[in-house]
Length: 379
Image 1 (cartoon, rainbow, N blue to C red):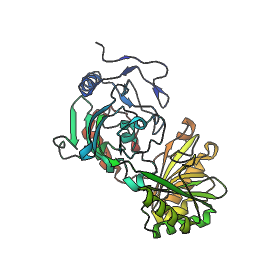
Image 2 (cartoon, helix red, strand yellow):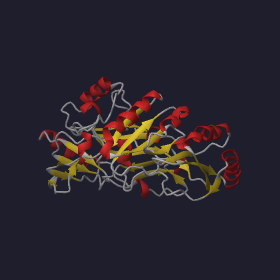
Image 3 (cartoon, rainbow, N blue to C red):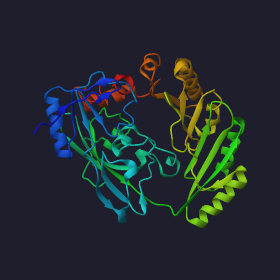
């Protein structure tokens, strides 16, 4: 049986067309595909739900797309240990774990488990439950060349001392193919409430300080700031019905806000339509990122915000926002942009540890066959 089929016009990554597409059904078959791809010197890009294929740079070359659409389903749900092992192509939104949850918000429709790990995306509840790196406890990958490696979680050992889970999280598919992930789970909360307050940007710092001053243990603290006008702050609390009611009442008083059980329409959605940027800052400096004339949204509780960058003014806006983030002690990265913007801006900005990242790439993928050029520094 052929390991791959001819690509169609739709099989592109960042505008670069592929020649072939493979959709392995399990880890063993994926290893066979990647052994053959390496033997034929094929450049490979992994595709999950396709929800973030427009992130990062286009590959320098592309021969084979390895699609994870057949790598789906729960391998094991150890409810007593609060652990799940799930195949990489499983849609994140479709996971049904009963009274338990994998607390990763699917921030883009169609996002898969593997794509969420590869792009390191965490939604609003990262404040209460942690990020992908915090929840991922084990991983199975197929390295370029077809070697299967497993680490952490319910399996045996790490490979050559590497923490594979942490290395592959946020690697943009440049180190190999993720086939299975093991995650720590949490009980599904019995109740939730949001306390919402809209205020001028200049008051947001004081409102965030008021949240921090209360012992309410929020699961998320999100803001939605349009390019002009007041900012909306929404604080999510989860837990028992009585506990949620008491904490929501405390927040209503502290913020002068309104409690509701309805999520606002912007909750957990990126604000951009053309070009999007991720900004980070220490919590106390989050207000410094507001009032730059662009729409911002994201987690004020963890200092991770997303910006809608106007395409026509992208070079100046990216420079201004990145400078503001750096002054605040953070960083600014362009996640996605049309081709003409990519040619005008530095997508990644200054990146500490780039030489170390290049050495890791050389170790895992010495032929640079996996997603060549997609990641920072042309990795």
